Image (cartoon, rainbow, N blue to C red):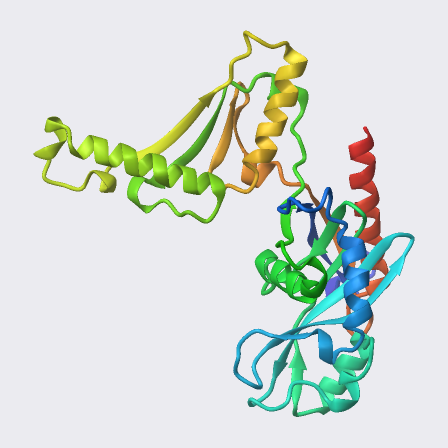
Length: 327
């Protein structure tokens, strides 16, 4: 409230609370880790899998072996215009009781409204914020919630499609948004593992596995040198290992160099600590190059997510990814 200067009367102003939040969509491609398939069509794999898993009960994946614990569930899905839209919702039981009412388990789909309504009057389960996703023939667009990670989503999709995929793991790689030409053309080197202790390097990825082998060899070599034997401390506590890949532009033209550096950027996109050294400064491959999109997530008057608008944004994101590829 405030005082109007001209009429000397108290004026009350009402403002409505915002009904939208800014969220980030992430984009992935499916990594082909099998030698038996020329390509992996996740869209078709999902459709084939759901022909068999056509009820909620067959799509309910428990996170532990204990009964009554949290589960992940594809509650509803739809495929139109070659785009698969789905909602994976964590289901958290109350007081270690049954997770979902029996009347739900035999259904093929259950809407968010039905779940929330049932959860509000039931003492048997509750629901957590879901993960929304859309899949085209090449790309996956996902809106994660704060407690639902990429690894958890990847695990559920692989569990859901296990009978179809059989001999390979469906891995999701972030889509890399290549930097502008000036960044590519001025890249002088790629630095890997700038803050990785020599003896503590994780082997969670192919590059980290290579780093561990290199670091182990380097550490063994250094500690055998006379100059290092009498230091009186563990060398891995003091030194860090950095791999520096120098970009050789003398043997190739500028256009070829940019294409090759962009391929290297994609190769290193899953690593936590890789930077491109450019004239404009360091560019983090992991943090700066991943393709994302900020959107406004609208909510209804009751506070529920406007899912129609959200899936429209996911579909537009997939179309943009396809358009960028064509360019």
